[in-house]
Image (cartoon, rainbow, N blue to C red; front, side, top):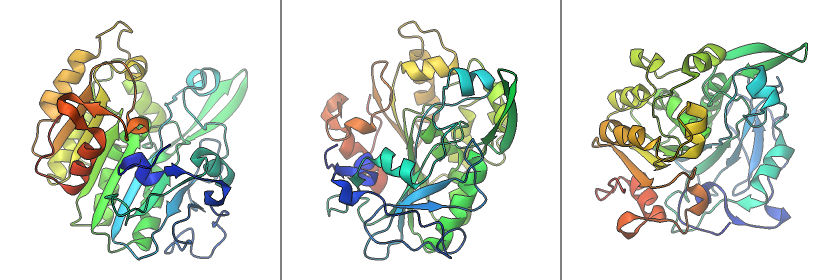
Length: 351
């Protein structure tokens, strides 16, 4: 991974040696679960948060990297990794990551692979407190349910508690950065959905502060199969007051933009994303998702505060190519993301 000026590099930039690995688990510190979090600057530290659970019932937490100079900027990245909603998807197909995994400091260090935060002057997020939210609940970071699934005659309990966890994380972060003036949320795949589903939690914790969202490989196109099943399995938590969300996933974007009209919502997507087609029930044939993507762009991403960076093809997620990816019109992805972050008037849909 090379150093760049934008997003995944902002959270995980410049592969380093073992000296850049996260510091030991700080969960035993008196202030870690509920009060302001203290952590060494410019070092990734794993923080276990009381009252949270991963799918297997073990405690959840997040990684945090604070700048040397106190900051009023906050960047939160939600990890992706599929979804699961029954015995088959959770334990046979294993269609979501970390369902049977205890997510702790060691797992966090393995996921980071020795990467460090980019604090260079050219990084628009370089002054921010950076937070990495692991994915270990299989529910798009938005459930509040505990389910028992029968697997080979044995009962397996799964905590689909991504929404519950996120609220606990928000509480801890609000105590840590109470005067935040800039807040950015992002995530890849399931993480991009999670950032959007939970935007209202951050907005409620910091009244008057715009909470901007960047979704990587997370298009809110209609779900053709299993949508009701997801909701039942996870008790999926929609933005407040969104009556249409139970029948229409695109309505989530409508609810967010209506409630927070100054928040910038950006989408990075391939127009025929094969992963989305598989999970959302579209035909695997070439081009089957394109009409839904086109409709989403026309209806939800053509507002004053919503834009998209769209490429033709069936690939999934773009963050891994931040430093090299160029879209139509020779627009660099890194530049486009910087425009999203800063509210540049030149920020526009690229397709």
